[in-house]
Length: 262
Image (cartoon, rainbow, N blue to C red; front, side, top):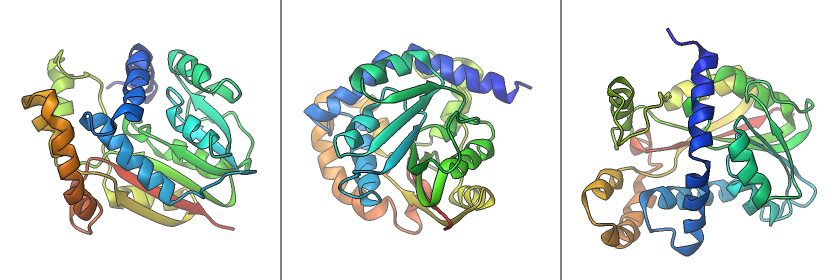
């Protein structure tokens, strides 16, 4: 059996190899957020994050756990939040520093955050839990670094997502398919996530469905030129269904909003 540390290092190595690719993907959001399924998913996520954050962050300390290329940090830095970034990949941090030259970054394991207890008002972690064999140490660390009343916004991958990606991921890993990233990922139900965050000490925990993934397979089959129109039309349905009580379990991404007790 492959150890947890080896799995985490594989995720770091894979993201180091893809750092330039991710930076280019995020650049596309400014041009057309409906251009493909990836940028559409980030458009939807941004809207959810903004629901739970104040319009201005002047004086508020925010930590990005697994900051990647620094795209999300740049968005909130422009709104006055005081940010710190942490990532395990030196290549991702290189991209993040270029985009955010005036922010402090640390290269570190997300299970052992190199920052003081109760140092931050807010923390977010985007697409990190899906690469952790055990999410509990990271969730506990996020709780530790938040001040009383602080909010965490953390994404996770549902096991029942409509894109059927969980079994596809297992197949890609087993067969080492070149067309898909052969990196094992981990999937968590809404109930599992709520229990994990409450076990870490969070009191108020909500799990939301961010967007549906039904378009992902169409994107692989149809010409790229038709996707913007399809995604614009799909968004009307997506807004109604992605976080509906039953349908949220089939969404392609969960967003956990968790508040630390005062």
